[in-house]
Amino acid sequence: MPLSKPRIDAYGGHDSPLGVAISKGDAEIMAMVGEAVRTRRLRLAYQPIVTSRDPSKVAFYEGLIRVEEPNGRIIPASDFMGAVEGQELGREIDCAALEYGLTTLAKHPHLRIAVNMSARSIGYSRWMTTLKRGLDRDPTVGERLILEITESSAMLVPELVLNFMDEVQRKGVAFALDDFGAGFTAIRYFKDFLFDILKIDGQFIRGIDRDPDNQAVTRALLAIGRHFEMFTVAENVETPEEAACLRTLGVDCQQGYLYGAPTVKPQWTQTDMRKAG
Image (cartoon, rainbow, N blue to C red; front, side, top):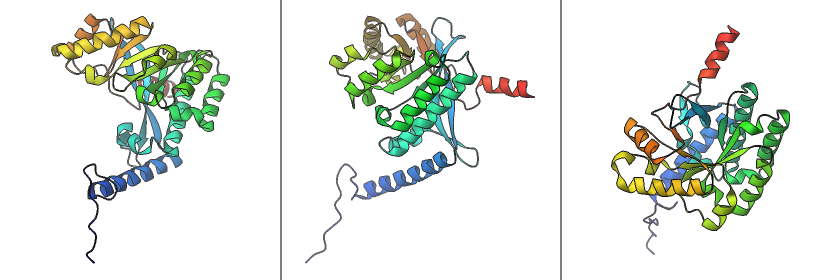
């Protein structure tokens, strides 16, 4: 009887060489991130979101989770969140991001910070406890906290997200719909979500000054934002030409490397060090 050949499919399933390589890579990533969580080698990197009319004014900062290796190298979330998002490890990362964000808000009363979350974390008791404790400890924190949830994540359990938003918005917390346009938001839910901020996905922003299609899509997304009275943010702005076009289109705020890369050493931490010295 001839030996059966290993099954290889076009999508790189786990039995294919590509699938095995991906699985091994994910396992290594999860081990690395798990160790970082256990040893508290996680940081928030802060990126400014500036007003379109006056880019010298920061409306708020987004806190983006990072892993810090023992040698000091900083690893962005894009390198590991795909592997851990659906695991409990992803919820632990959400907990750390929220904890660091709340601590920063309590320490710096002039700041407003957005922290990323997953719809999966709403049912994670530790994450909910962290949020409640932070809001109860300082009543001003809720008014300065923004919780960002991606369009695709919100659609996982829309009813759960709706109920959670209704409860937490009463405490002053704002919600941002991240990567809008990248997923498939059901309009029947969108009318009920009542997001405060709409962040337009970067795929429509890149080269917008010379791309009529991107301009048309962005106009449509902005019209939705205005209709539902949402503050609008353009993501991934990298050139002055893109920024000028977005101002003309009427985007409220802009975020991207043109205005600053995410950093684990924001200006206010340097000010704290000077005061301590």
